[in-house]
Amino acid sequence: MGNIFFISVHNSGLEFAREVKRRITDAGFLGWLMDDIGGGDGWKAEVDNAINESLGVLVIVSPASLASHWVTYEWAYAMGRDKEVIPVILEWPSGKADPKSLHDKLADRQYRDFSPNGDSPWDILLSDLRRIRDRSDIPDQIKRAEETLQSGHDPEQWQNAVNMLRTHPHPQATEALVRCMESPVSFVSAHSAMTLAKKSKCQDKRAIPGLGRALKSVEWLITGSEQKEIAELLAEYGTEDAINSVIDALKSGLFEEHHMDKDPFVEIISRFDYEGVIDSMIDALTSNHPVIVNRATSTLGRIRDPRALPALHKLLVESNLVSQRIRAANAIGVIANSSSVGTLVEILRKFELENVRNRPKESDVVESIAQALVQIGTEEALSGLEGIVKDHSVDRFVRLIVQKVLTNRN
Image (cartoon, rainbow, N blue to C red; front, side, top):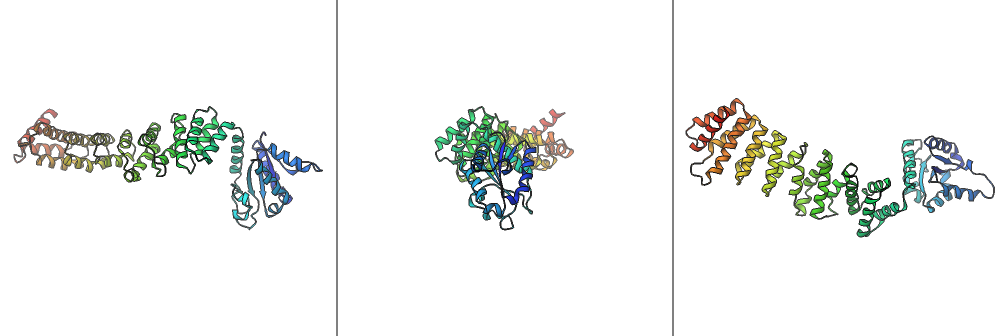
């Protein structure tokens, strides 16, 4: 077949058709026009042979060509031979862009508009031809797999097709997965994206949007392990847009609506420092799972964004777990923002250890808060600690711990 495209045109559009031929020839293709086919009794057979040998047909559309028996025959014959047919609009029958004014079979095709009011997309038309040429080299096994994914109805056959595309070494197997990611069937789109990510070892970034859609898909409710697998693939990419896909899924409400566990996804997000991670980690501080709260607290400390401070202050005051309160104080100290000073000093002043049963552990909380103030290190923070030591209305054990922190500092 080479690089040949048959150009179907009425005589009235022959000048434009020759321009099309010149353009595609300059791009490395061959264009066949009626000029290239001899007359005589064998004319129809030569047309058939020319179409059979071509990669596809460019139909130069005008009112005259739509009314032409022979032009209609040429593109209809091409469709019957499973050739690609591209309507190239020279003149709209209705005088304005209106696909409904075309023959029904042409109206279904992606047209390119070269009419007086069109955008004359030569680059796009040439891209179309390259796509058709590249597809002509696709092994039949890949074509069948893609056809199964695009038009089949059996999930088992879909899975077999995806598996074949994953293992097939031909580059077009990868391109077939990219195309199938756009399938309206969520199962097909999701598995194509997952397979593309695995096949490329998370190097082909075209899988990222498909993975993000799969993670949020309401139509395709996957198991918890499959959900986490998708999120882990996005984490392996590690780019900001990949991690934002996980964050967007958490914000979508899907997890709450379907009572799905979102903590594994919080854990994945906590590995990164991107801007969008902060809000997710703040939300995670309210989780019922201590491990997730601890991870979120450490992450917020590592990111050092002051926006996290109100939530960390709240955790420090309200958590029933000593370990969480210590982590909160540590994170506040790492962030080291002076806006925390007044809150931390006030917490220490109200702290009571005198009659607390679990005094050793609670003492660790006091020490962590005092250390946080030392880390902040402003004059206000240090004078606040010194004021606590001198204020006998403050719990005596608190004063002793603060004194020890100040002494060790020096």
